[in-house]
Image 1 (cartoon, one colour):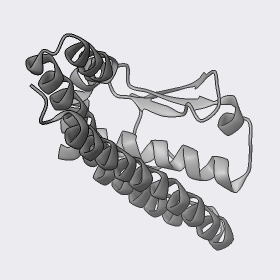
Image 2 (cartoon, helix red, strand yellow):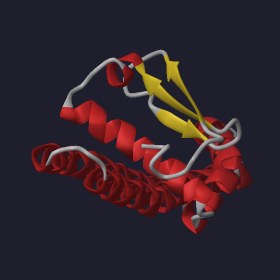
Image 3 (spheres, helix red, strand yellow):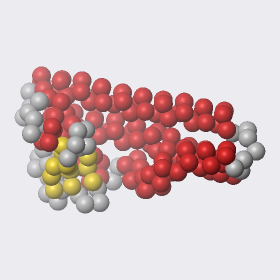
Image 4 (tube, helix red, strand yellow):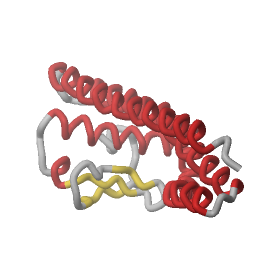
Length: 176
């Protein structure tokens, strides 16, 4: 797929684990789990094509991907600190810590929201790549179904994150 798209500077490697497939724009490496790399299933084809979609986003400087990449380090820190700050703020009855925890959790929710267009676009690019390659119509149809199901997991993640943020605000937002 990368040759067909004219991409020569991205390495492909394996990564341990299940559902760990990802594209690393910093090292220009597309990493596939053994379950994807060693399989000829339609699901594996869909996952590999989706990750290729991220490669194409990076090549084309797709703005939502750039934004997500930019805020990812802050969100990683925030995801480990949000709940401890909330709890510490409650235990110490110190409102600014509670507010900091809420803000960090809101950043996590924002990241989840920004992830939606990135993932949907990667899947659209995957389908377009598959349709223009030598895979059969049946395989493309199956890959579309897999990608649609995967997209719903991101929608569910956003719904859970929004509900959790709302719950945290309602529970802790008015405490001093």
